Amino acid sequence: TMGHIGTTSFFPSKNLGCYGDGGALMTDDDALGERLRMIANHGQKKTYYHDLIGVNSRLDALQAAILRVKLRHLDDFNRARRQAAASYDDRFSEIQDLQTPTRLPHSTHVFHQYTLQVKNGRREALKAHLQAAGIPCNVYYPLPLYRQKAFEKWWDGKPLETTEILCRDVLSLPIHTEMTSKEIDRVTETVVRFFRD
Image 1 (cartoon, one colour):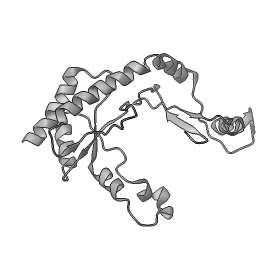
Image 2 (cartoon, helix red, strand yellow; image 1 turned 180 degrees about the horizontal axis):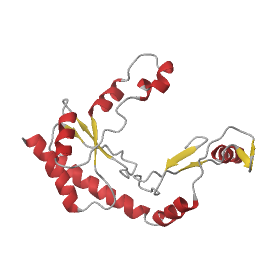
Image 3 (tube, rainbow, N blue to C red; image 1 turned 90 degrees about the vertical axis):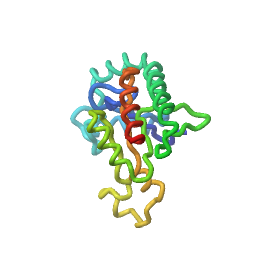
Image 4 (cartoon, one colour; image 1 turned 180 degrees about the vertical axis):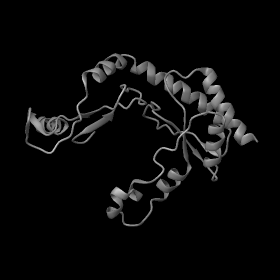
């Protein structure tokens, strides 16, 4: 179901993150796997012999050791994020101008991010309100891929309505595995106060 190659990131903020940049590629195709390993190792199969154009994209031993330890705790990390998200959902359920993250019936969300859709053009004001209170929040991916300079030559000029709406309206709140009830309360109370005032 992943296609020919599956990918994952081990960026530090991810549910399973190392202390630096890292990631993994997965395939069940041996020839493709060998090619991927070569690309990630400067295009080399043998040291100093470059058969392909490659990059330095190897996970170092320290990052691998950190991931090995953290992997044992991944279920607990995901559970903590789901609990934080449930608290957010509960507190925001009555706010008409917020859409909380949707969960599909036959899936489990692990909440790498907790992203709200802030309706009626209120996102920037809510973001400023949270930042003024010292609460970090972020707009991830504010520009659709097709509007990025790197992809503009392939764009047919027709905007995707849902994509445009989400890029305009989404705002991510703090969520991590060590969030305390007090921290969650502070975030939710600040958001609720914004919509109440």
